[in-house]
Length: 247
Image (cartoon, rainbow, N blue to C red; front, side, top):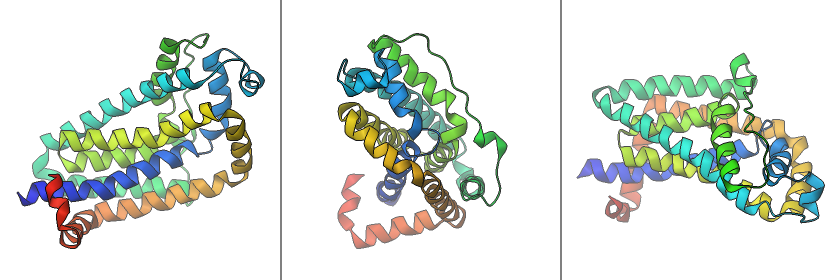
């Protein structure tokens, strides 16, 4: 019973990290600048056409988010299944994951650079005309093609999923990450003019955002390495006993 309660409490901080990682992934230097062109590409009009509401980008953006969410959910299920298969080595897996996440965080902090993480593999999904199916396919391509770019954030959440050892928990973590990355896409499509103006104001701070992501990765990596996530989960159960009912 304690294991179930602990798993429930542990999900809350991990879910918060996943949501924050998704939002910071959207704000990363290799994602934010391409949002308006992608929305224009999916709707089959130029950026100016989006501004004048020549065609709405909301439905294509929704299917785009569904496409990338599909890939992330599969990844979450696979990572959880892997962790479950090696449940007896959870402590070792957590330490290995912690070291890897710290290394990726140091990359974002520019302590050193990992060339692979500076690459992008953009996939051409063909000519778009605003169709839902094409937008969904583009979402699938985005999830795979931008893995080097959002890989550190995604790797951190996959590590949390694998060390949890529960299929539902790991899949849910990737769903939360997909929400953090996908909801801003939808908001940008709904409020396109305001979104473009906001993105232009954010661009000078992209390097700072990247360093914030790096700091988050290092903190989470240290927590995985030292077992602080488990300790924090016990503290949550003691401070908020009602969390036990979530199991």
